[in-house]
Image (cartoon, rainbow, N blue to C red; front, side):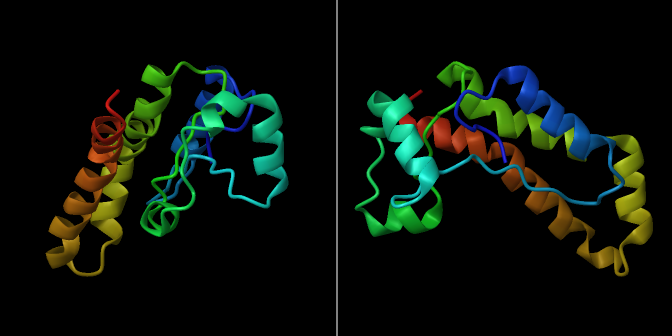
Length: 134
């Protein structure tokens, strides 16, 4: 998870670097979401009330699809909303990881599915930025 309140770009990079240094075949980089009623939500309302005003948790579609993303970190918005996309590219474009995924895939016919999933991960933040008009 990335984007905790007061988290810096260096701290987010450490999270990504830890995942990239692992032998994992897959990963997910989620933005922290301060859901109403949680302690994180109350902290975000105290620390970054201006940013919390922009998030509408009342729309059920937005709430359940994870589109209720707010930048609570210290990173500027223009860098923050593209950060996960860059993290996915760094993780999945590692030649050693690609080789392990190909080697360990039981059915080579599923490799195109892996490519589609990778494409989705790597363009998700681009689509988010368009949705947010950033």
